[in-house]
Length: 197
Image (cartoon, rainbow, N blue to C red; front, side, top):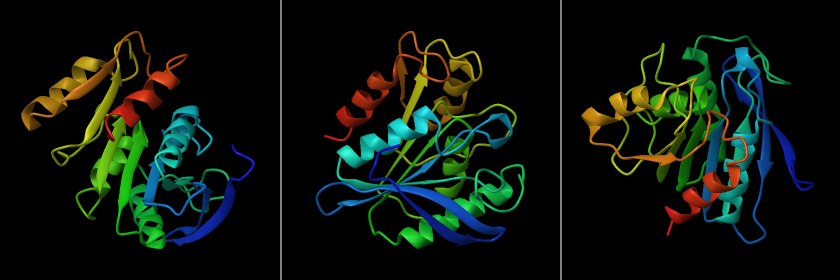
């Protein structure tokens, strides 16, 4: 967490939603909504991949919002198998009220953002380690940046390729990276930045 990170609370369908918000030094060009991994497996807004995505978007000039899903940290409510979690993201999306909003997520959070993308307009979408196993992950718009670790054993690369293939969707593979991008976070950051030019 940066010293400048502020906490905000957004009214959600299951109670208040705790958010960490990071703002760039100059007036923001838009907002990035970043979703964390599965809450029942330790996922929080402080997850290193979620933080890396937020910092990357701040570097790119966006205000980055990282909500805790219901039942995590100071967010009220309890886990809802991905249904209420999409509603939580929608509540924060509406609170952000930027006409240029990027949807980004990691693992379970990426799957939730794919679902949210069916309901709201976004400038772009970034899905990292998207959790396509055990849940329905809908197709995403063309131009979505999908990043996956070559050595991911939690969500095998083959499963993501199988999901992406019918959409003719490219998948950027980080060689040697596991699901959590240990020692590869800088490569993830550089990849997102390179795709923003």
